[in-house]
Every structure is written in C-alpha cells, then in structure tokens.
Length: 345
Ligand code: SF4
Image (cartoon, rainbow, N blue to C red; front, side, top):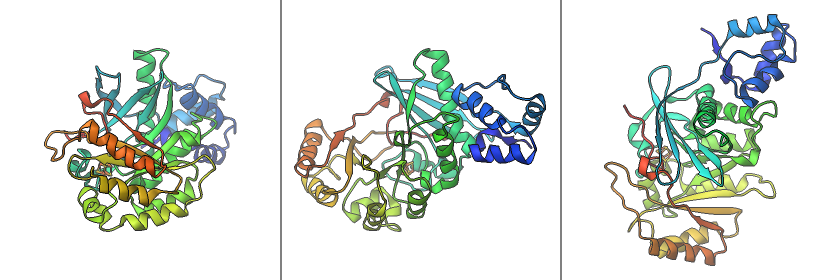
C-alpha cells in the first residue's frame, strides 16, 4: 500500500528523497505545490521526471472526502462532514471573522473523554485520526472556499477544538502542526495555532517540550472539583490543581498566554461564587478567559444562562483584571458551535 504524502513532515520527505538518491530540491517543490499552492493534481512545477515517477509510485495523494456541507444562514459558518477511507466520519468547522476564517479541526473519531456538556463525548472513541486526515481537513476546506466563495480562501487560524482530545493523539497532531508551520508549505504562524485540552497530563508534558510556541487552551469549566468531575470525568484522574501546576511551568513567549475556556451552564457553574473562585485561581497568570454560553444539542441535560447572568459573571472576573471575552455561538443553527459536533452515523 502506498504511503500518504500528507503523513510526512518536511524532514520525513527530505529523508525519503535523499535515501532514494533523488534531486534534493524535490521536497521543496512538492511542499510548495501541495501546501502553498494547494494543488491536488500531479506536480507540474520543475521536478525531474525520474523523481516524479518515484513520487507517483510511492505516495498516495488522496484526502478525506467532503460528504455533507452545512452552511449557517445566520453567520456564514460552514460545517463539513468528512468521510474517511474506513467510512468513519468527522466534522470540521470554518468560522468566519473579518473576511478571514478560523478552522476548527478534529483530531479523533469520537472522543474518550466523555465530557458531559459535549455531543462528541457521547460517541466514545472510535480511533485516532492520522496526520493526513488532520491536514486533509484543512486542505479540503480551503479548496471548498476557493470553489464556493472565491477570493475568501484565507484560513489564518487553526484551532484543535473539534472532535477528540488532541493531546490524546499527540504524535499525529504534532506532525500536522509541523506541516502547518513549515515555511515550505502553508507557513502558518506559530501563534496562529491553538490546541485545546481537557487537561490530559501525559500529552501536556510532551506538548511543552515538543511543540513549544503553539498556543494552549485549557477546558476549565469549573474551579470546584465536584462540578469539574461531572463536566470532565478525567478530572478524577488528572485533577485541575495538577494540570495548572504543569501549565504554570510551561515557558511562554512574551506575548503568549494560556486561554482558559469556561462553558457557562445555567444554575450549575454560573454563580458569582464560581466566578470569584475562578478569578482567584487565575489572577496574576498570563491568562485569557473565554466564556462560552452553553450550546445545547439533542438530548443535552444543561441549559444556557441568560445574558444578564453571563455579563454579571464577567463583571466579577474583570475585578481580578483577567482579560475575558464572552464568545457568543457561531453556527449553532447547524450544530457547528462549541460542544455540538457529532458524526455518529
Ligand atoms: S469537550 Fe473535547 S475532550 Fe471533552 S468529550 Fe468533547 S471533544 Fe472530547
């Protein structure tokens, strides 16, 4: 079976090219063709015929297929359902902002973390995605924009906040980041990539050493153990205090900060005491808080608080001088907002 071209980072490709005595410029030409120009046809740029023949014989260039596209009527968010080779499916979301897009990528089919506020958690974990399946979501979404919204193919931010716990599939996510960051390819700035975690400590340890500079978002959701255990069951194995101790040790660049995500659930974690405890916990850190009013999904047991309560919660955090943003839902009419992804057949 041929190896997927999109599973290789730049140094992997260079190594294969040199082991096979091909012209060393082939790696740069191929990365430029497939990642910078985002072409899916055979490379037409300057490349020796023998290299081209080797490449065609050795690599598979297929990508996940777009199965269904949902476009939000409210805000132009786009949700893709991708079909993988083994017929599993994953979802990816393009979120518009100022004539550009952020892309929210999935890292696993389903998820093992079973968070109670998340539709994906109900699916259980089916399997990890490969690097090519992760990179493929980006390339296919870019091509969809080029065909359907020409001139708008500007995906400037990448967030690993789709289906799956990215740090639970560390190797494939790391390689995908290396491909996105490569100056020979998409050349996305390191500050433009963010990985979200529920607090999976084994992955956190590796993250700080192996992909420094990539931004981190922690799903915090409650400063109190009992409530966080209900929302994020792995809190019982990796308690928040331990997770924060790890995060505090991560060396950050001058302008870098950790984002703390907080889903606000009506009459559960939206009391002023929750806000005070959260503020005291994060005060003085290089922290940024995203308040996400809960997005419901079929069968969900929680509700979104009213705007008044949300604003009062933020007012408390403001007294701790922590930059806090209320992130109103985008794409919730097509179940594309935070916590709403589910690709179960
Ligand atoms: S919130 Fe993230 S980690 Fe939790 S179940 Fe959903 S996808 Fe998994």
